[in-house]
Length: 247
Image 1 (cartoon, one colour):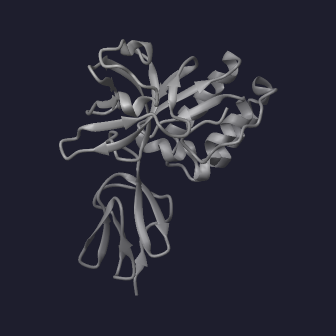
Image 2: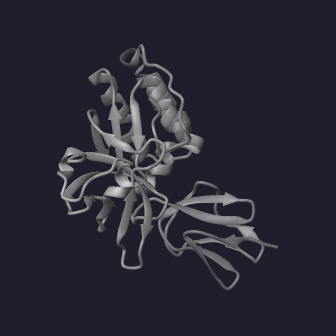
């Protein structure tokens, strides 16, 4: 009979034995060697029934089709814009994917997005040569202005968002801030008061630092409760499930 050698949410290192026997199935971040399942990277154990996988705790962002990301415009092209993806690969957003408005050839594209403008966009294609295509056609996708941008480890983004958006919703509720989380590790925070904005940033950084610790939700709740005075008047906001903020 199979035996699991680790507990759910344990932090494991490459080569560590996670389970013995053929009763369990390896998934992301794990592999089988004979009758053993081992970790292939540093990560947080996630056990779902008979399936064992790892949530990465390190590594750089690699663009994937379907990801919603935040990044600055870095170059104006003849037919669109180049955007920094916070990875080794930049991306291109063509005019037809940026707006439904007709843009004549040769038009001044800075009228729409200038160098340095931040945009929230979706990856619609990644080729075998790692050429990345973007779109701004979709719910919540837009140019972002005001507020502040912070960078976090992209592997910690699921913990910052929380299950069904629970963690980021908690931060919004206590601080009244508007928050957008890009899957590439860029987070936008905008609040009506600098103190509330700063608290939201500190909370996000705390989650990034302590993502591997069990009971993280309770710890974050206690942290925010301890700063109630500074967030007095924060308003509740509904969350649309994760990546996008609802104003």
